[in-house]
Length: 442
Image 1: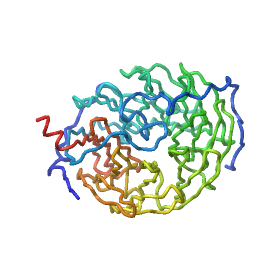
Image 2: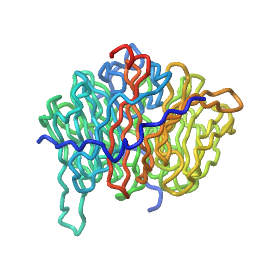
Image 3: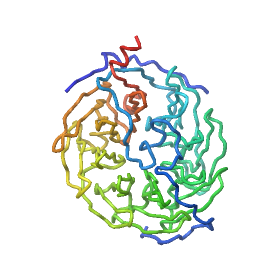
Image 4: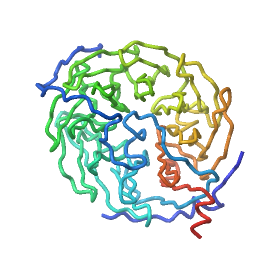
């Protein structure tokens, strides 16, 4: 095991950067708008709807399995860091995606979203998402949870709790906005013919076509749900059947917006799914910590309980082993066959917002990366019945904000991490590379 610490004084001397500037509801297609006939199934899978970058969407790919085709650092060292940004009200570093032309996209909570140049470590531009007054005594805050989804044509899709889905050019210019939703706290997923899928807290799954035109919407509850429809990662199979979570259930919807089936957990909040290599859908609930596996036909394969796993996405290994972080201080490896725990690895700091703060990430060699409350990034091997620590890298900062921090791995092996320390007011974007790569560039 290798232990790698950032030099003393790293955090205090980070350079500040100035920015440029209800009852379960109706089943089938209740609320669905008339739609065109379904398109034919794609000839290749996964379909080429995402940009050919190393991490173009939350979860890394259309299956949202948090698995990368690239290898991460063998011996980690700090490549660069950015800190503090502009102290915008409500800033919270959440997730990272990788765009084209050396650009990172970082979700900043109520600060909107940042586009970062990885070569200069400067902010290229910022999307500021304004709050919205509904006129009914309610306020839609401008929170951005997930960094931009980068589509194949370079268009960036950003969802905000202000109810807007934004389509942006790569220079940050707004191409269009779709505003017929309530809070958006889920990942926009590119679908067929240039359309975008996004679930909303108004209890609809929206399919939005090019130019921001509504193609159809699927209602999965009789009334707006609030926070029970968050952290959904819509995915779909080769036939175009769409899978997403909402109101504590996993839903399957046809390409024209009609219900195929639902698998209800008995709770009111769920997130996921991640799609396995055989099409199995893995998802989780929040209140009771259920981890569930459902077939593409809607049959429940198994369910298991893990403590305090809310707001963290599921990572899948090459054999579909599930890796899930928990606030109880453990990273769990779970068998895809029956949901039994293969092993757990303790990172300490068990508390409500503690333990493993990030989604796990699995690289091409099967190494698992996870970020902990105390600011330590771990790299682990899965040895079947146990985890073996490969290395740890300490940032020297406690991440006291919400769990669900996203990692991203670039094609050159650079690992990106965004971290927030709400108590200290420090917000950090870190790039970690291999020591050999660093030495070769000196």
